Image (cartoon, rainbow, N blue to C red; front, side, top):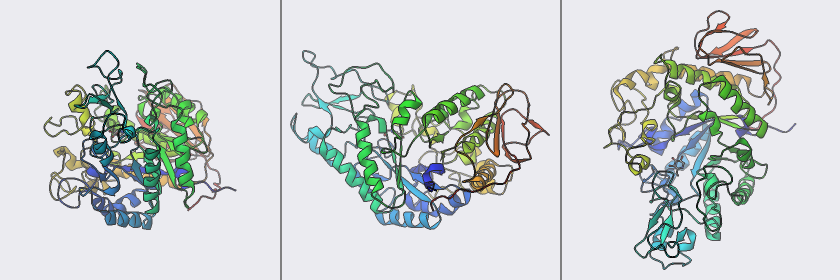
Length: 523
Ligand code: NOJ
């Protein structure tokens, strides 16, 4: 029987490096900080970690503006420290994925600096997307495209040419029709694979190619847009897959792919392309059994090894999202824990974001002088941006920086986090952390024993009930308690059960009594 590759059902923990743990006391997390906390992650029960960019960068977008793809920024450490981190992670049974940012570089990248000093239509400018104004309209952008971060997607140089940046002006988009660009990224992939990484998370994977002629558009993320999900991107990922497959040990790639439909998403995970793509529809679904069911059905109909994700460094934390509009202030976290059980019960792999296990909520009251997200500044504060989910983690102690480091934290932590530190939650069986640890352990105990398909069971209005026999997962998104389906025993629940009833905002895993026959999996 073919072994299941590790990524197929892995739980991957996203580490937003600058906010995880700071070893130097400069207020910014770093690689040595991550290394010091590996025992915590191994003990939490995740299979792999994904590190957000730690490459040389002026940090105009938290490191997603890369000036050197093959070196560590001194803010985060050194290449030697990276190697130590990989070795330690592997020693503790954790796989390690790194972020690749191929849509754009930093404006400080040597190629872009050369392009700035090169004439129009030069080979140096051809690595990026430079265009003149439209004929007869000398002061107009080459087209109507907008930056994802707000404002136009074009910035003009003194010589009159404009360059494209789908994100901040400090993040010029590469020209993926240029063979040097393609070749250089293959070199970057090999560089990190040679250092032992288990895979890559690919930033803005659906953006690399733009439609010929760069036509105006009003379309969103759909495959018909001239900006996103162009057919040519798939050839890039076929080349990348061949590189990954040329290394031993099931190296894998997950794409950050925003699309309009599960069908479009599935195109990225064809057998000769990426292994996975983030399933953002799951994260976007509101707290509703109907909405969850629809996402599950469309996902499973389109993909064999899907992913599930509720949170990352770009979105409002789920304990806040699910609580919006709820009368009970604890509803957000209760629902987040119940949703975790649904996610961990589904076939495929699950991505967690640092701090969700602590039940952290979005920090909404950050003063503008500490904010750093370009989204906030480019929209002149109309959009708060993503700093609120990036506040450094509380590890221990009773006052900021809560063990994050010895020298403060680059974003201020709320004093209330004194009650949410890892240290405090670890010894409290009723804490969110203890619940996550139990849930991850329960998932591990079932690993390899469940079918890759689910069966929907009759569910009272407002509830979601499905089975991967012998596991039954029930989540109550309604306002009244519902009767639990028949079961031999309760494996875990996100809140105390009320006899045979599942209270609102609660999830449970039930087990039917049946012998479990494990399937083989790769180490
Ligand atoms: C997606 C990343 O997750 C986000 O943080 C970043 O700002 C954009 N891509 C641009 O690189």
